[in-house]
Image 1 (cartoon, rainbow, N blue to C red):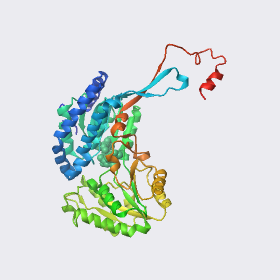
Image 2: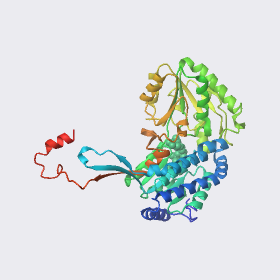
Image 3: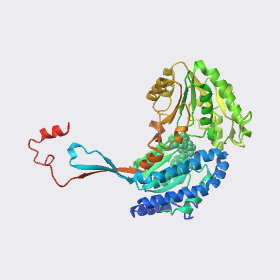
Image 4: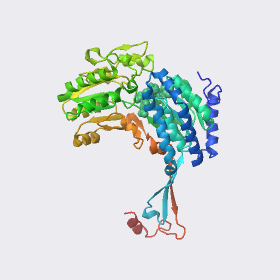
Length: 470
Ligand code: NAD
């Protein structure tokens, strides 16, 4: 139900949601969000508040996801603070109109691209990184001079409460409004007219968001998920590969959109890879991972049951244990998996790592091709630059790493986003600023001369036009 969920502490009904959006529109029209000064002040306010709320967020992440503090800082608060610092430092440069060339037909003149804010934005965040995936797009939206209605996931209520308090403390709802809602509230939100919807979540809900947006021709950014492959070739440095795969997979109990969903390993190194993988998991999480201080829990009972149902105990190499009371699923590896196994039928989004094997790269491409198009991420472990290049050129994916997993996200100079069924549009750093901006293209023509080429009467000017347009 909708209660107490707008910054001003009022109960929120459909008419109140409409009112918030209308007030944001008025506020945006007033121009208050557009100047460099107001953007930078709000970004600094946000950065300082995130610093103050850091321990509250870490406690909430512990409560919602059993998350170790190191991971909370690495992937949430630290990530946001780092991005805010970079944005504050570079915003003046990003906001400058960008000069571009002017083609002969448009001469004499000069051309510039003005990055102008989109207006009133709706940001919908998922449960798995409830801080980072709310505040990273919010940072980009504020930097680009917008207003925002922010909705976080009902599945992480402790993080939602801290987010609400933070937003309520530093922003007025006509600038940034916080809504915590379930399907009912989100459906009402999606019926409003926004200038842009930025959604992070599953492809299923992404499709609902896109259908709703289509009714009002609202542009969408969709940051979705899918089955991200990890390829371990015969020439890979297995020791390094195994360490990085374990870190990338089991962070946040693999409730990570870019986690390697499954591994394809070359047949010739399969047994050694599996042995090393099992040893590494035991080394870092212990024989009983439920006692490890470094391993998160599953967000809720539904997801717990769904993930458990994907485990085929006959194929388990390590792990396989679970405990419903504490929502614990051990880091689990399954061997000799094929596309016929249930674990390959959907995005796993939990600590289960299926391992398939291959003889030639064409087997790899065939497997990827049979899964939904296209993965959000792809990870390639090989020492050969030819193999690396071949795979990058052949598989279509959002982004990824060579000889690493998930750390492309740590570089905010890289655009982060999917392709095909894994998403539309990318953000982070300047790419986020651009995602929340419209590239307004302006040609400024000289007035000291008026060339008659394009004016009527056309006469025989087509000959000249042909030369100019060559
Ligand atoms: P989800 O799609 O279930 O929920 C996302 C948001 O949509 C939540 O705020 C939720 O309240 C809302 N929602 C749920 N059902 C809705 C409906 N019927 N109508 C309107 N809104 C609805 O996703 P989740 O379970 O929170 O997150 C996991 C998924 O998100 C995975 O698929 C994962 O890969 C993806 N994800 C992608 C990224 C990325 O950056 N590409 C990041 C994190 C998660």
